[in-house]
Length: 274
Image (cartoon, rainbow, N blue to C red; front, side):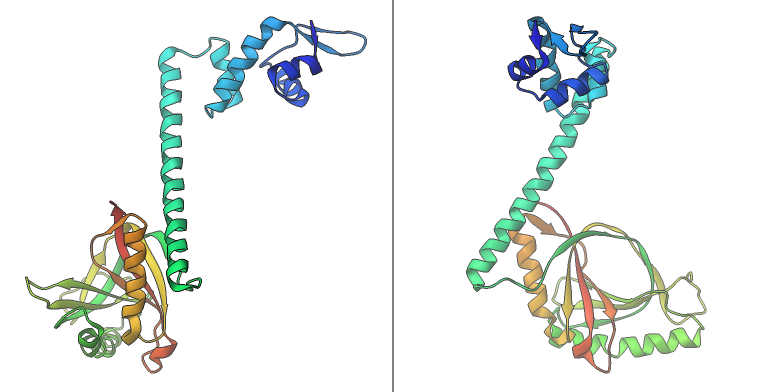
């Protein structure tokens, strides 16, 4: 027979761990000295210890390991346990792979620009939101075409909301979609509200759907300079293995029409894995 220290050395586990296994009934010692309390183990018990270690390394809990070793788990249930663990590990690998891609992209950016970028892209889920909106058409997505179209829409929208006695329930949100086959763009100038559509109102009320995964970036300053931030966001999406899809949104966290350089805007682009 082996002392607990000798058995721990043979099994390459700690004495503390063997005491824990004994305490939960996972691996009982072959004998315990009634006077000293010393634990002793047979060499044959190494087989059970090795199975404990192997199953534990798969990520199974000690309760699951004990049930498996004591033949309390049917084959079908064991198969389900392992399939669930496989799915968990696959999700973990995917998450770690995405983090690794992000680190590689950040390193490339630092090497290219010689500095740490101050813009941080964050992936997030965005909830569905109801907005009151006015629309107009711009010649293209370029800020020089968008700005003169969207700027007068918001004062007019707020005027109509006030007339209808509808108060904003959240930030202003703008989004864009192409019109036809050319470069023209439909500009949607909206603000979050909590009312439903009504035929008597002179503005539309629409529901923007939730986005499961959006790449987001906070832009500080005038929207006339947003193109630089959009380029940073687009480059991050490409370098980190994502694909842009759906319509980009601009969420005006701090809307400053009189001092646009003080504005704070979150840029959101729906993405999916390539």
